[in-house]
Length: 587
Ligand code: G6P
Image: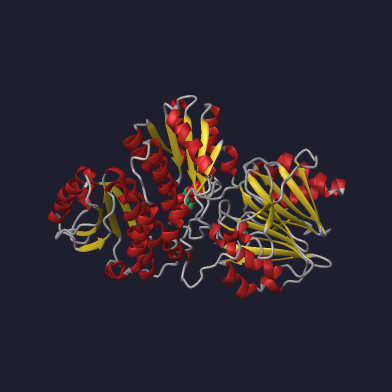
């Protein structure tokens, strides 16, 4: 989604704002802009494109001034144009605003502002109503705090925004979208994402919903929407979230794929108590709903296979965005296990609020421990995989799966006895030689369709592999349960078709070999991901032999690599896939 950043400092803020926006660009990257207050006015520069390109063109980082705001956009309301890029100024140019989220009643507010105040709108965004409302209210009271309180009364929707006043105040307002205040001796920063914090700042305050902060010079004050001073705690953010960089890798995506031998060992670590509580809740529940979006939804499907197979639990997986359509069937007083890398996806937060209305106990698995979802949960277990910047989830997926296996293992009294060092070693082995996958990517770079099949617990991995391919290569890919091939998809197979078969030597192997014969009879090509060679493979991507039940943890790595190297062959930047954002905080 959009990223917002505000900074007050003793020195010029524009260079830091621009470099922080660059770090947060993975959450939205179709346009960018800054507004900086100097002695007499607020100066704005904005344009379409990624941060570096727009900065090269407009020199945003050269504007002088000690207080300013910036934004990277993922368009929701209004096309991708310079006019629609943030910041947006009020009609008198005295207040600039950057915004993340949606103002649901903006059409009505626009009409009211046009009709009653002769406001002329320059963009087609929902955001532009905010600086104009602020300006109208400020003109009445000449009090920034009052103007904020009056403005939020008018706004409907989920949003966080920053406002920069010509009088020097920098304001941050939070209503259901994340907003963090970073504090140090010389600088005060407002950001939607810890990754955007300047390097010298590690002390933060996570604003609660319906709170706002006013920064004037070196002072900050936090209030609730009623205007009362709010309680807050200062926390220290983990080192791994500071100075996030690609290191020697070409992209964050491949760096994060290669981190997995380490991150798989950290999943859920240090959270033993919470993990035990989650296990207890699941063990004692008659019914468990597991929910998530995108990649996290695929993990929800795996949860069903693992918890029912190893612990005999009744589990239903529900896509977070579909929860509201299933709400009338939700069994009251059940357990809801919410899975999310960011903990900020609007769909998962809505799913959880539906669950709460049915008295569900909310448990969660999250990478961002201070996220909104964490606050909604009675117990949370952390992925501990460090910041994931690549828009396509990779290391967070294997960490989520590792935690599922830990839970399943506890539910079945250690029947799996998993040694994650074996998995980590197997990852290192797969990653130590990617030459076959690179060669495959070269050979198939011009395809327009790719199928991934898997059976049983491998089916959600087939969906996840296909999602990775779609997301970062723009090749149409479908994840299919092997048995379903003959019920439709075989109609699409011919000599130009490639099918990836997730085929570890387990109870799905024999059936997969039958599917392979059906596919080969239509002259399509087979890419087999397996620990066992079969002559029907046109390409064999070998995975190490491990304990049979654990193959889902392994087979996903080659799929991630195929997606990555195919993106490279097709000339696509995998870190910034078109039309996507890392964390989708709107519905
Ligand atoms: C977006 C991302 C996906 C991610 C999904 C859920 O669509 O592009 O990669 O899987 O959101 O995100 P979450 O943070 O809730 O796991």
